[in-house]
Amino acid sequence: MMKKTVLMLFVGLLSLGVYAQESAAKIEFKSETIDYGEIEKGSDGVRVFEFTNTGSVPLVISAVKSSCGCTIPKKPEDPILPGKTGEIQVKYDTKRVGPIRKAITVTSNADTPTKVLKIKGTVKAEGAK
Image (cartoon, rainbow, N blue to C red; front, side, top):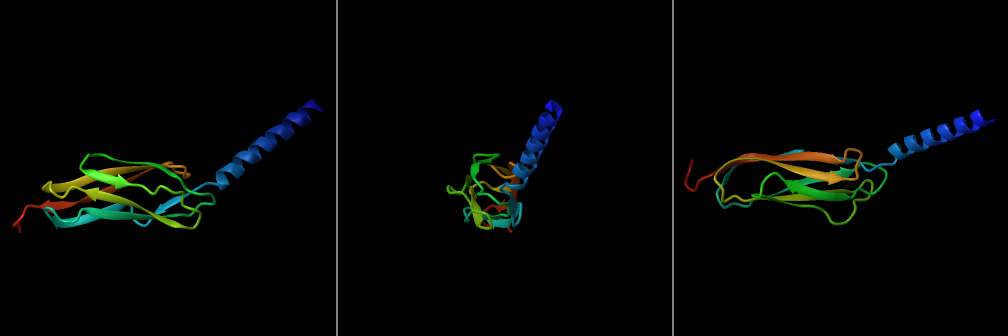
């Protein structure tokens, strides 16, 4: 009788773990890299990463951090419901001339809790060809 109880308890916990994995938020980005290309010094440095919650529970983005102070990310404040889209805005300081190679780390309750997004490109000096 004891073995049967322990076995039932084990099977119950195992199935609960499988269910918990199936009901998760999932974040799918349209693109994980944004290429600014060649842009002029002082031009608009704002770009947007679009994503969709393809999971079955609301997606909560808890943090978005940049690898450098020259890049300012902005996360959505409200949860993103299943099937809905959201965006993470990134503003790069285009007063800095030279190559752009930065990483933005997104932390959320998704099945993959940490995603790294990238921006790249080149800021040209004024009058440069």
